Length: 371
Image (cartoon, rainbow, N blue to C red; front, side):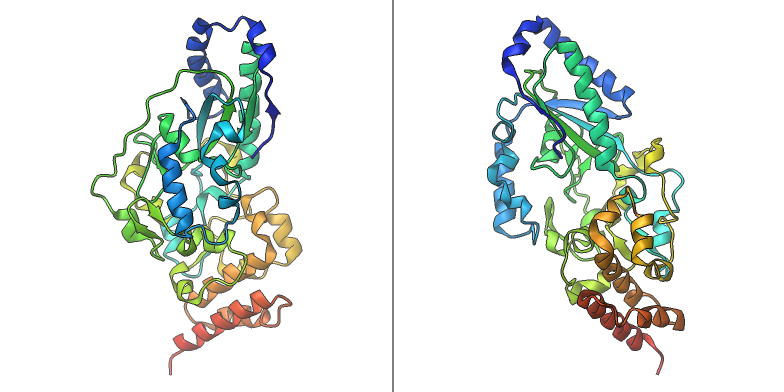
């Protein structure tokens, strides 16, 4: 997400920023990043030529589904120096998000009457948290250098954040396509600071998945179609967050009680035994969303939804898709009068999308009723 654009090459050379100062700057950047709450910072160059080939192939296979923005920017996504002319270095940063006091993730997943929300989305919207911190980092760098050309991105910009983070030594891209750090697992957010400073790059991280295929076997909808290849059209995170139309019926049973995102491939990853809980109060669960019942959430009015998801990543999907997702969860829940009553209450909802998913859920409930 762009929050600042400030490329001015003429002034920088007047600051006396020599090669010795440039060589010392990375350690200062790491210190400042830690002071701002980041667990790690690394530096890479801008060459993503091999990753560009993988991106082209992924788009050709249409694994991006309806995420048209993935193709809209073309190869600027894999060419930082074309996206932001003048870019010489990329500072990648990571921040842990796993909430320490949240309800046990596996216990919530195993209770089909509860609603599972991906643990990254339980608190404040990470875009807002990270972009403000990275802006503060940019301010500190600029104060030290006298002038700085930069742009800040957090997830939603056309940047290949995981390859950049890998090249900056923050971790490797696992078979589930998430970044993994050998000392911190994968429960962290990424952000980038593209800059015109010629900073010395860090060593890229090497891959350490080996023969493990736990994430592939655990995916409820078979979205990891091969090691390091994700078909987003089958991914529960895509289906419950990015997709705005009807969720394909064959995939609905596999969604289970997941109403916003999915953590399964990370929950089974052996490297997450090293994951650390976050100390960020902003990422603490809000409104009991770490262990709420499906029926309770399905009963929210639109005003309640807007109020209780304010400032969280959940707000972006809107009330209609929220009800759509929960209807699928209720269809997968054990049969009972309370579930049926909740569904029937929404059977005449103004949204055709909601009505269709409610009708499907009621049919699922009928099939589970004893003869």
